[in-house]
Length: 292
Ligand code: ADP
Ligand code: MG
Image (cartoon, rainbow, N blue to C red; front, top):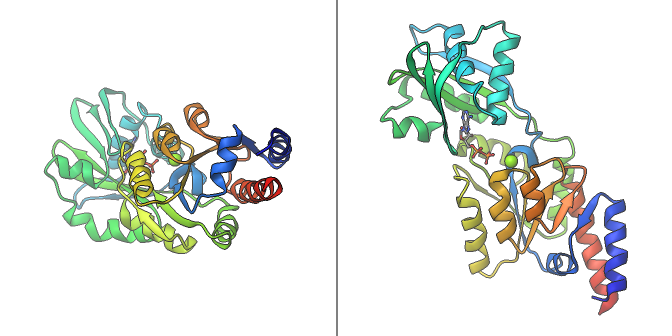
């Protein structure tokens, strides 16, 4: 591409809310056939809200929420904020947790009122040798609504579950339709549960879902698709997404996301929604057409 055509494209991109890092990103983007999107914070608002608290028989709902929220005060994860806020809104008083520990991609652990408490997904409780048997059907019903379920463990027994909902961004459905029309294959990658991911993916017409993905796995998924000969763009907002953004042929960061994601990306979508990708593709095509 000529410096002039690149400058024009960069200027038009900026006006449309797409920051283009360099000419290579724009040139590579024209050849991209596969778009991987992170779920939380990219397709969804990334601001989940507490929906349900379900105690095991014999346990108290307020106590289950109190244990969960006391622990999550030590975490900066969006799921943690939802649980703490939910407890505050419901007037549940929280205790001070100690020995707090985050288990990446799985949950959190610590001590509340001198008792060991853990909170997290199926992988976390499986690691502890527990099964969600009593609550399994109820957990699946919540997941089929697109909610994320977390189990609350008190001293090696499941005490209950909490679920949160993270609404899809208003702009997401139309943007995905336009991206499909432009010919992209769209893959959703998420650390969330498969059932939750499928419920959201089906509503949005996503082509393929990779769920239960650990943070380090996102970059590997990009590499595998590239090894199959695909040209891959990855859109994400989180610290966890940065290695995958760097590995992709074109990394696309949400301007509302983590700084390290923005640094790793070729494009930054200032408005933090996927509309910008549609514009970027049209710009890439127009620029490349002009110079050929
Ligand atoms: P994503 O790729 O969707 O941003 P993460 O890797 O951050 O996902 O988290 C994956 C899963 O791990 C979550 O869906 C949740 O079940 C569990 N998890 C992670 N952090 C926490 C936390 N602070 N509290 C409870 N569960 C958590
Ligand atoms: Mg995210």
